Structures are given as C-alpha cells and as structure tokens.
Length: 168
Image (tube, one colour):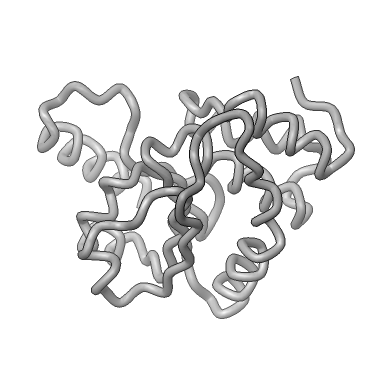
C-alpha cells in the first residue's frame, strides 16, 4: 500500500503542475489517512486505498466524494485561524471515527492542505484513543509521517487545554 500511496502522490503532484511541496495523502496509522482537499477529486485513489469514510474539516469534498460510495462527516465553515474553536467538534468527530474504525472502515481526514485543521483533528483523535502515551508523542508521530503539518497556535493551545498536557 505504501508504494501505491507514493505513486498516487507523484501522479497527483504532476497532474497539478508539479509545484506542490505537500504530498496529497499520507497514511498516519493503519486505516487513518491525512490529506489535502483536492485528493477528494480522485475517488478512485481513495477506493484503492480502502478509504470508506471521509472527514472534511472546513472544506467541502469534491463531488467525486460527495456523490461517491463514502460515508461523510463535514465540519463546514471551520477557518484556519487562531480564534477558531475546533475543539468543540472533537466529541462528534471522535464518535464518527470510532464507529468507522469499529466497522472495519478506513478514514481520510482532510482540510485544504492537510497541515493545520485536519492535522489537529488527527492528533486529537489519536491521543484521545490512546494510540500514544502523550500529546507530544502523538504530535511527533503525525509530524514524522507528514513533516509539513503545522497546526496554528490557537489549535495547539486547544489541544493542550483539551488534554491538559504540554505540547511544544
């Protein structure tokens, strides 16, 4: 699967002019992917990856996902600004993600670039569900898989407050 992700990323980057420095999609852990919004225009790639569910944070997915065979959860009008309260959505997103995974599904979490909003949701879910021992360890794991993540300072502060833990 990792080879397929790499090939798909290369094709998508080339398709969009070859100027991206951010890969369209990244596998973070088994059955959880983090990516850009425009990857939702390629339902065929998502299907081949086994994606069954899509979480859209602040960006409506392309019609290929909207009209496709995916279960969808949308957090509309969530801006990537420090004053945006993303953490109020954590419980409902966590419920959707837990159900998807317990049903044997795989999930793409995306925003515009897969760097701030969606990364924050991914980090929060992984930490809340005990994938890692601390918030910092969770952040570091996601960053190791997708080095260009950069949750805005407001989102990082919400993670610290939600989990009552430190985060550099």
